[in-house]
Image: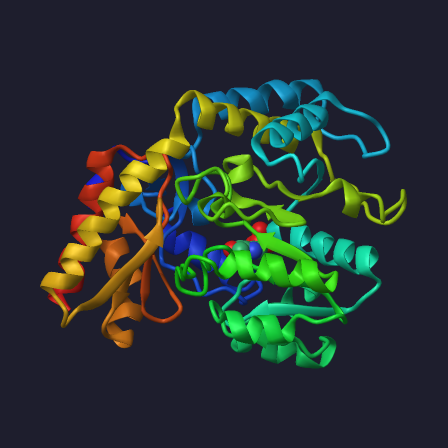
Length: 405
Ligand SMILES: Cc1ncc(COP(=O)(O)O)c(C=O)c1O
C-alpha cells in the first residue's frame, strides 16, 4: 500500500468507526476504510494511504475524482445560484438540455433532471404509464434499476425484492438476452419493457447482437414503450456515448445517472416528443429537480468528456483491458472462466464464489478499490481518463490476488 504523507488533524479509522457504530443505519455492508479525498483515479484514506479506484466511485467519477474543471464549475455555480425550484427557468438546466439533445438521436429530444438513477427510473415508469394507460412492466432477470419502490418493482434480483414483496406489484421478469420469451411477454397490456443494454450490477452481461432490436420491434408492434436504463452504461462508459449506439437501436425513454454529474448527484430521463405530448404540468416534479448546481456539474462533465475525447478512449483502453482479462482467463481456467464487457465496463468471471467474496477486502489491503458483483464477477469500471499505467498496475495487483487464491 502506498502512503502519501499523513492527514493532519483527521481522526483515525478506529475512532471514526466507533463514533459511527451506534448512529448509522446498518443497511450497508462496509469495507474497513474511511476515505478523505480523491484525485484522478486515486483516493486517500484518513491515514494518508493511497488506493487505486477501479470502481470510479461506483461508476460515477467518469472523469476522475475532483477533476479541476468540474470543481471550478461547481464552485462558480455555488457562488452564483445553488438552488431554486423548477418553476423558474435557469441557464444551467437549459444548457444541460441542449447538451443532451446534441448527444442523443433526434428521437430523444425531451429531458428531465432528477437526483438519482432510481428516481430517473421512477420517472420513466410513470411516463410509460401515462403514455400508454397500461400498468404492466416487463423486465429482465438480473436487472438492477434502483432501490426506491417503483424501481424495485422492475428489479430482476429476487434477494433485493423479497423483503418488500408485499408492497410491490408482481413483476413480469423474463430471462435476459432471451428474445422469444421477451417477445411473448410483451403484449397489448404492456406499458413498457425496461432493460439495461449491458447489465451492470447483474454481472456485466452483454446481450447478443439483435436482442435490443427485437425488443424495439416488439414494443413498437404492441404499442408498448421501450425504456433503456443507461444509468450505468451511459455517458461513455461502454466506449460509445450511450450503449444503445453499439446496436443502433433508439429507445422511447432513456435513463441516465452516475457518470452524468462526474460525482455530483444528478440523473435524467429523456423521451421522445410523442411521449412528452402525453404528460402535462403537475405530472411530475420535486424540490431539487433541475437543481442549477447539479446541472452545472453535468454540463462541465460533458465538456470534459468532449475536450479529452474520453468516449473514444473508453473504447480503446477498454479493448486492451478486455484482452488482458481474456488472456488471464485462458491461462488460468482454474481461477477465471472468462471475460465479458464493453469499453470500460469489464467483468472477469471468477471460478470460486467464496474467494470472489473475499476479493474486495484483500484488494483493499493491496491498495486497490474493486467490486465483485453477481457473486463471481470481478467488475472493473474505472474512470474513463484513468492513466493506462495506473489501470494496469491495479489490474495486475488484482490478477495476482486471484492467482494466489
Ligand atoms: C442500471 C441502473 N439503474 C439504476 C440504478 C440506480 O441508481 P441510483 O443508485 O443512483 O439510485 C443503478 C445503480 O447502480 C443502475 O446501475
